[in-house]
Length: 198
Image 1 (cartoon, rainbow, N blue to C red):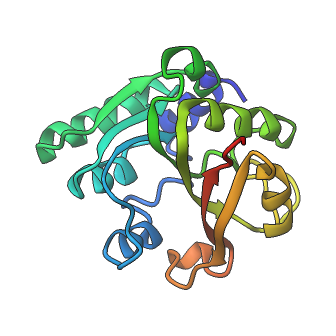
Image 2: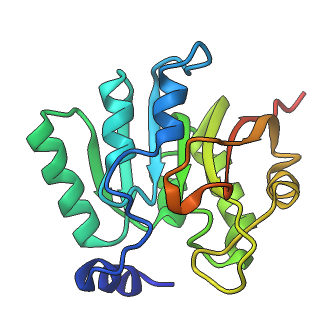
């Protein structure tokens, strides 16, 4: 799927992945005792930036990345209106390694892994590792539906684990109970840490 495909989805109003708010499981995580400490975070496929704004509000240094111009324009406008420190870049995520090598403390994943072709998933894992610092973490809300076709392309918790190991240690990967209604029972929240090479 190229940037024109996604841009067209925004233009014609068929961006069904856009829930109009930050994902409730991220809200719960940041308000919990398990909340990650603030640091530099990349939000891949950030869309209109709701999750990015949420993390910025909690003290994170946030860069949201998307290659649909309308998404970046909307996210930038939302950030300005909210007085948010979040920044947004129009980029192809697969070209970030050269610009941000081992730069981020966290990568935030939400509706990006499910949007790319399943054949690109190994390249996605490599990208995430390359832009994270040693000991960096991926915080991901994965779409674990089993419907045919896509996007969004589904996956199972086992498939997700298999894709991210051995590059990452799976600290947790659990079903969430407070998804938006249309995704109930179809999301897992994971926290994966870059594997230390001894």
